[in-house]
Amino acid sequence: MRQIGREPIFVERGEGCEVVDVDGNRYLDWVGSWGPLILGHAEPSVVAAVIDAAKLGTSFGAATGAEVVLAEEVASRLPSVEMIRMTSSGTEAAMSAVRLARALTGREVIVKFAGAYHGHSDGLLAEGGSGMATLGVPGSPGVIAAQTAATVVVPWNDREAVASALAEHEVAALLAEPVAANMGVVPPEEGFLEFLREATIEAGALLVFDEVITGFRVARGGAQELYGVEPDLTVMGKVLGGGLPAAAYGGPRAAMERISPAGDVYQAGTLSGNPLAVAAGRATLAALDERAYVRLGGLTDRFAAGLRALAADRPLQVAAVPGLVTLFFSERPVRDFAGAGACDLEAHARFCRALLARGVYPPPAQFEAWFVSLAHDETSVDRTLEAAAAALDEALA
Image (cartoon, rainbow, N blue to C red; front, side):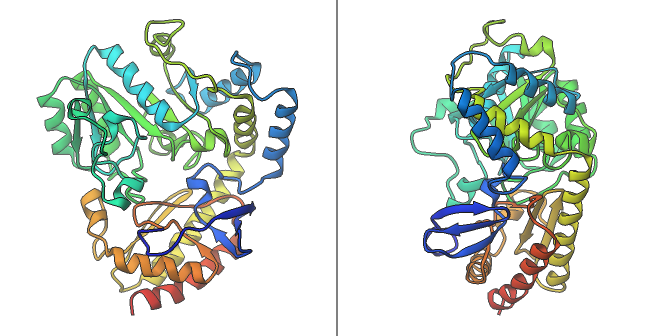
């Protein structure tokens, strides 16, 4: 909210595709808790599942049968995943996947992409996107140089830079959001993910997909299903927890059995696999069948097409994949973090303020995605486009 020049909204409650703030103002919500609420706010089936689970106990510090059922559902959706280890946040999951990759390869260097955000663990805060990009912070005070020394940063969609990094370093893993969604939505260029798969195999490095945002959102099996590229390890979160704190990382059995207590790579968490979060995740995934993804894709297409019509001959670009949309205030298509950073942030800020004044709550940052949910419908999309038309006239006047 600081980036768009206004005070934050304090939310009192959410209802479907809307939120109501403490002053009673109602907004069409396109933030959706930054991605988990693919079914919308206070979805009855999710609320009921959480209440039923809470009646049995809120935490045990021990395994439950429900965790196994959730793991089986994940494995049925992601062919690259045979086993998962649950955590309470995407940060923990990404950090743990990197630790596992280093153990499996005996190497230290991690390659990541500029503008990609993989949580706030020290070693991955180099040139992060999302909120870090909004605040213009390339790393963070408190992170010492030694903790990022083994992190190599390359531009997204740049094959030559990736090839050079893999050739110049003994790389443990290349960590990628298969659809960059923390610099705004920037899909991979044609063949780029296939290139990453082939290049990492040749270099003896692991390919790790961070599907915290894309997982179970862009398709039933995430971006790896959408693009047909399987990584060695997958990081999951957001939709997986249905709005409660849950994340996971997973891969083949042989790799995951290196995790303690079965193996020698340590990771633990008192609330990992918390029964309430597992219940919310199971209820959410149960609602995400083939028909749900067809509807989500249709709503996304309607929204993106409407924004493209509004963009017309203006200095605007629209990027979209199922469930995710970004309107870039740029004269040229955005293909990497540098392109996202070159957008007109002042015009974007005026646009967001104008939308909020019209009862539409957009992501208040150029570097974030708009999250389409199944609680949205054609009417809410069209109402947003109507507000966007007026807001663009005001922002670009």
